[in-house]
Image (cartoon, rainbow, N blue to C red; front, side, top):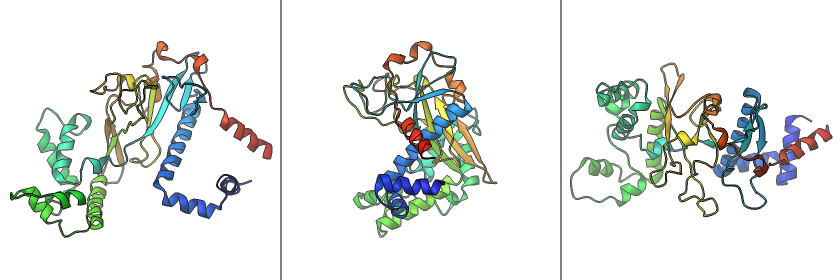
Length: 325
């Protein structure tokens, strides 16, 4: 049975429809695409840990029998073959709308954002005038900000609600947008975003979790002790699936509760050169090699093997496929 036949059979059994309808439905649903993307990330992480690093991997059950252990909020248990210490790894993706969220389609926002995060950018010498270096970089790499993109864009809702009796730069920029429809403004913003992202992309986390007394969370982000390693797939900003790793204990704590992670960390940037080659730059808290993070783990942070609840469903499926051959 070839891969297309397997897919056809799977779609018919699970969704009671054809591959054509399945594909069309998937294209029409960003939420469904997000779930599939998350599953792909988990699978690729599992393969990477097993094949590249030689770890033993066990999938953590999503629905536990009884109360879920507070320190098992991840995707997989993993350990070295010669070790008795099991750790928990959680996988996530990057924030999908980071550049738009920070309004980097406007010159001042882009300039100030790069200045704020200048310590994460290798081509900036922080002993010299940072603003001058950033401005020169923008004008050199994104020259439309010298003239064509001088004015600021604002979201449609802000344009419609904005009222001011003063003659300000913002008032003039919004006045210029008054006659545009929502779709037209969105298209103009998207055009600028594509232009900016042709040279620079932001790597930002998006840690959002449910808040409940059961999990002992005091806010809607994970606690720092819920997993031992966080693996971020940066494929939304990188030409291929690539993971960055960190020990959550080494990440800066939330300002509201030191036991919690922040929702958003700027991990670094991807700069695109003249030849179209991406250059990845990340902060010292993040690593491309999992071994570097593994070396920061303490034995006392490992999970008790007696507390582990393992998901064996994929094993049953694999056995079923083997029996069909």
